[in-house]
Image 1 (tube, helix red, strand yellow):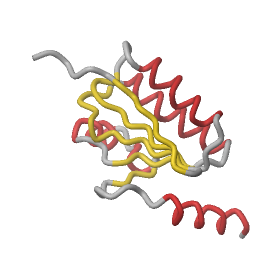
Image 2 (cartoon, helix red, strand yellow; image 1 turned 90 degrees about the vertical axis):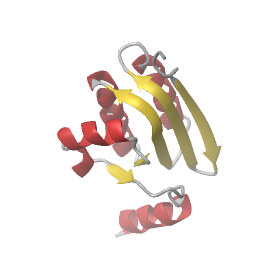
Image 3 (tube, one colour; image 1 turned 180 degrees about the horizontal axis):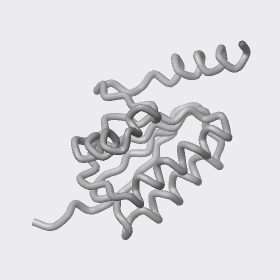
Length: 126
């Protein structure tokens, strides 16, 4: 059995975009991930949820893509949440201490965009 096929699919609901990533995120697939996440941010969302439940492997290039997207999102005032990271992803995030920097939601239910956006708005007004 070979590696899982890579894919990234986006779905928009109001100001929240969910990018569902599956398969191996490595040197061969990272370009598509970077392009997709950059397009989402350019398209003007207020919240980006990156669903990593289906990621079977994440190398340093994939990690770099997530960090670069997070930095870009901060500049654009977009909240970025890593949602349901798979075990391989959680391991890499823990080893690199990025689990202390990135917003990570391990619950099965989708992060509540309305709640988070309201909190974001309240924080920016304070």
